[in-house]
Length: 295
Ligand SMILES: *Cc1c(COP(=O)(O)O)cnc(C)c1O
Image (cartoon, rainbow, N blue to C red; front, top):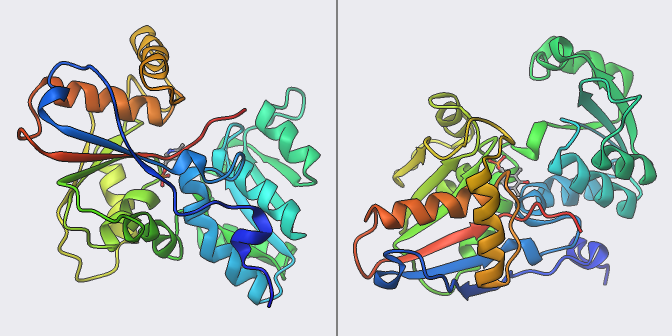
């Protein structure tokens, strides 16, 4: 029997659901849980694995030897994909927003050491990344390559993300997740959980994020969902002193590491929602730890 892609990559699923033990104002009235997708893999962590699973297994089944994908200089998506491609003997061509050739980020240094071929695009060119002409141009440069969009958020990602829900053995009143490019929230919605779905926008994107999610959803989905936009702390990867302190306190209280770009904003938002009596007493709330930590 051939090894599954999880075995080939040492992916550990299902990820555990744990009680979240915090002493926030109002938390005593609720039952809080955390799904530890940060524990799936040390590099291919969290929602990036969920979103890439079927794209990568399909690539292997179809004998794909090259993948093109996109991201910023700190992209968790490119980081996860680069490592997975190295392990699977697939060549990754990464199109990166901005020119970091003089000062590569830690992420890009990892990509280089994992044999990813990097092309730096200026911001104007990168902005064209979803245009058909632009895609055609790169596809003709690499005719055999599979193209995976930014963040890995594509329709094919939804089934992998939906497994976050199908792994659950109990129901929750609400599931809370960070939202960056929308694939994770869209995948959860598509799994049609009985829970209310709440996304926490990690960037200034009111209207924009809802559009990204809606564009990914198949028709006929009735699950209610919403994205809250008051917890981005000024924008993508913007960090306030309060948020930094919150992340440190959270780690001290729970023993669970979070980072300020995604999971920090998620749990900071959760704390504020709970303090404002957003959830009815007795509710069972599941927060999704989407990973994103670098060790
Ligand atoms: C990419 C990422 C997200 C955002 O997920 P989307 O599917 O792009 O909305 C959330 N958390 C972490 C840790 C991420 O790396």
